[in-house]
Length: 367
Image (tube, rainbow, N blue to C red):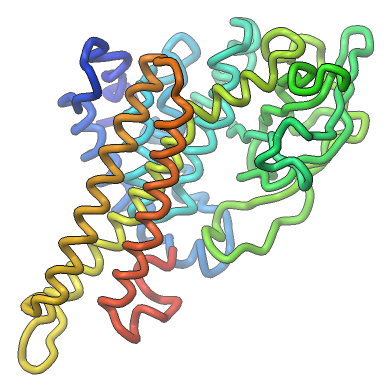
């Protein structure tokens, strides 16, 4: 199944109450899983150990058309729904968490444009991402404005036919690898949250710089950096929506994309469960396979139960977001939180199944 065959799910089954996986969704899962196991998994450990960007994964995803499946067809994308986007991320994360941030962050960075930008701006940005020639990152957070995003200090002022940005954004996933950046900046400090606007910045814009890569505890193949704007000048038409609507766009973006991080967590948990299950079926102690011990059977059953519960919550959240239902904040946040907690619990238990071997950097989930 290649990228053209993936033009399926686009807004299918819009009348269901929660969600229902279509045959196309299941075919997509099979295609992404096959690609991930063949083209991404063999490099996962090295990517994490070396802390290098997973170029093999990006090339494979681009070739198959899976790097940004939710970009509309009119801009060269697949036009897939948000549930399909989650399936792609989940299946890649099952073998490599770092690589899963390629489709995840392309989706995150694209969503503000998809929700609020003019058709002209969409036509300027989306085709290069859909073709795999560019990636896009999302820049909201600052050192003193993480959860309290409205406290951001990055500023943008109008100067004739341009906007001029000054400030710093931090924790920007895939910064340095991305070509485009959606950026939130204050255009009217007196209006507080209603004085924040959204922009699209290109890496070649004058006054834009990328900082050093952060040293992280995990997901080392996906670079996290600060980005700097020093009189960064961009064309006036690169504002997303009307001036002063950026914060609303940012919140709406998070409502739509928190489930994608939940999907990443589900994939990580599923991958850990899979390797733990395979190991206990193979490993023997006291003349019996570990899988024959009831205590481990209970543990694996609990792990599987948690993974499936998290998956269902993520899929429901993604489907509600796709339909544009109101009050998405709770369900999208719950999906992200529950799935993340599940990934932590399941990977910890999976490591226990491997006993001492589970503490080694060469464990199967180290990538």
